[in-house]
Length: 216
Image (cartoon, rainbow, N blue to C red; front, side):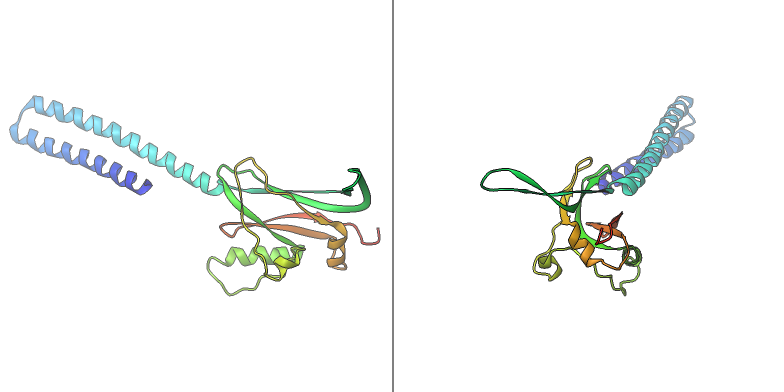
């Protein structure tokens, strides 16, 4: 649709120029001053139309570039809270001494997009993952590090996590993982980890967070 409008606008613009040239040739051949006056009006009008057209093109290019760069962007939020459990019989809520990690994403861009949770990894693996996907546009010969999703069905490939459509200003579904699972999995790997998301274009998003020692 955009290409059709662009071609039509270009055709009209050059058509007006061709008409002005034709009138100029006609005026010179007839040696009529009134005709020259009409040609001058035509040329002035075409100049105005041309100026408006090129200003429009410049604004449109800048807008397209801005939308491409800021069209959609996922900002990740991470928090910690105590585990809670609701009894089915009495309906009471009990708070455990263990913590859980929860996180979600917010589309802070200007256009709807789709994102999905990939998993959690160390800071070193995250940098490797980012580097791999940055160069994937020109080189497909790379191997991604292992990312922990903390769901065996996804880790074994039995289920595939689907992309979730998020409109601007809205948030994705909250994901919750018990802190002890993360501590056990990454024991001895350092305290700094990354939660990793990806959009439909393969762009990687990450947010660093710190976990306490297992014995604390």
